[in-house]
Image (tube, rainbow over all chains, first blue to last red; front, side, top):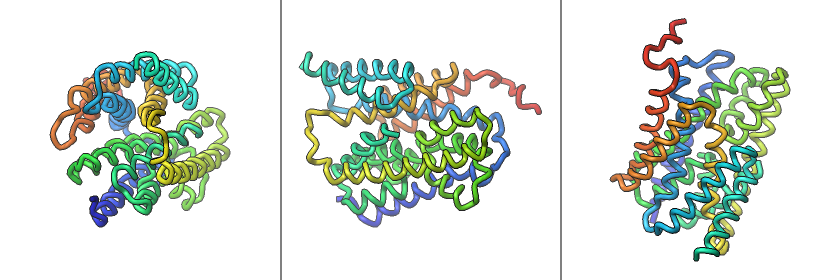
Length: 107
Length: 216
């Protein structure tokens, strides 16, 4: 069972920290600019974090190789759709339909 | 904006199945209000990860908001301070993505209010869809495998962010490390993968070695 005090404390710490990350540009920077060096680091955070999240979803413990393979294939297809259309709903649809069909086909 | 709905349903449903009660789930979505971080936190909480790992993973995932915030800042100057505080709290990938494409037209006033409208809409959609997921999640048929919508949403966010060769390197290295490091102790796999990916991207980004471009 999750301790109630602990969980609220974690929410508040992450909530306050996240607010500060979100506010630092909008509230403190105004029309100023980030230093190019900091900018270069930050520009890599989105791609790295999101790719790591995608990959670790495939690498979850207990899933079979076939299942992981199917998911990889559908994620690749979804990436192509995302790249071509820049449309979230189409990306989701392509990925889900791919998963359902391959599962139905391969069991 | 519609892409937020399945993402929210899954986040709400998985929070409940990880052991949060309804009140905690609502507090979670309101206080943290960040889909990718919330999902990663839920999975870490489920695996009984250390508090520091939960907090650091979430903040690392949300570090990308600094860049969004800085790039939006000049366009939000026309807003009153209260609206900018609200716009900061409500900053998301989705609101950023739809607003930043509006900035090319040079009408700052319009972009600022457009952004605020987009954030409020995203916020409300997130709260309602996580709540719906929390209430009805247990009843969703297992066979639909809606959990797969989560990595798909990450793909939808990831692909448009791959604008340079360096960002592609960062993403590939991070993904590779995440696969290998999935079993690292203390659930440090994601943090390790993201940090190595960022470093790899910076290393191959142009102008890095001598920082010649920074002289001004």
